[in-house]
Structures are given as structure tokens and as C-alpha cells.
Length: 266
Image: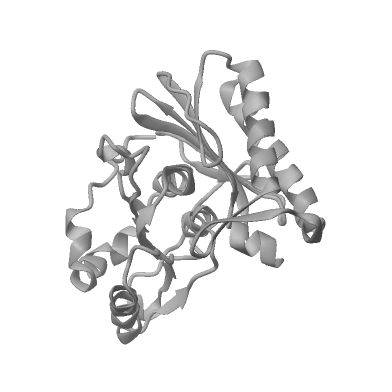
């Protein structure tokens, strides 16, 4: 069986279990990790199920999960059992399970499963992006005046910094969206439902699978692994349609210094 087939089984298995917990969320035990940062027994259980499944197929591979200790190897699976935990525990059906495969410090595969819509997004480096087996062919807008801009809330930004970014986009005519699950927002961007997404402090399990999917759909995206401390320090997550990118640089000059993931021929 191909690695990609096993990865799809793993992310779907995790997402289906997450959906079971979602249906019975009133019975969950929920802990607080920090301000507006929650974890539930669902997160821990889903991650354990996914790691167990992958270890049975790839016993020599490493793991980096949001809720478990890191296992370092040349090949490393990066897991977020439930991206959008706050949505999940509050009953908002916008969350997903994410899985990425890193080899020799490159993201070579990304899989994201939205269990509420039964949509599985996937991408392989240099081979395009897909949802439920259909290749994504996004039609992004060319300007903020016609675009949808995804805003992720970062607790490390001051209210003034975040407000400044939002105000600038609004003044150019953009409409904003903040649905609360960065990985799924990157899938929305890859599908052409969003035109820009920018967050300065996302963790790797929130970002790298979705960034690869958006990249393989043709978006300009940040290279999350450009910094050697990407496993331990939150990095910038950025993605945009190519035509709107020049306006992004005008509006948010800090985007000029973001390392970008290079495109390869499909």
C-alpha cells in the first residue's frame, strides 16, 4: 500500500473519531492550556489513535504531535488531531484533523480531513492538490477590493497590531473571515474560497499540511521550515493568490521578508 493511501486512512480515522466526540461533546473533559487555548480528551485520544495506526505501518518514522512528545527521525509525521478546538468544544462545525510528512526538512505530503463535510484534502510536493480525488483549480480574486481575507487570531499580537492589519484590509475594500481553524482556512484558500491568509505565530501542526496544499494549488505561500527552530517556535503562515500578492506587499510591508516556498514543475 502506498504511503499516501495509509496517510489518508490515518487522517480519516482520526477525523471520524473526532466527529464522534463532537457529537457527544457535552461529556468531554476540557483543560485550559492558556488564554483561549483549550485541549480535551478528544484531542489526546484522536492523536493517540493516529500515531498508533501510523506506527504499525511505519515503525521507523518519527512523530511531532500537538499533544504528545516528539520522536525524531529523518521522516517525521506532524499531527494536529483537532485544529479548531475552540470551535469543536463550542459546537461550531468548523474543525479538521491534519497530517503532514516531513522528510529531510521538507514537507513532502499533506492531508487534511474535514469530518463534518466528509472532505479530504491532500497534496504531494510537485504533484498538485486535491479534494476527494478531484484536482483543485482555484479562481482567486485579483485585488483586496474584491477579495476575501482570512484573519487568524494570534495571542502574541497586541490588539493594536491586529487591528491595524484588519483596518488596512477593510480600507481597501476586502471582506474578512475568521472561522477559527487555520488548517481548514488554508484548504479554503487552496480551493479559491479565500484569497489571502496571514498569521505570524502558528504552530507547525496548524500550518504545514495546509501550506503544502495551498502551494500545490498554485498559491504563493510561506516556507514554514525555512527556520531551523520551526518545531519549537511558531512561524509565519502566509498564503495568497498570485495576482493579489503585489497588493499584499503594499498593504503589509512585513510580508516582504517572509521566505517563500519555491514552486516545482508538476
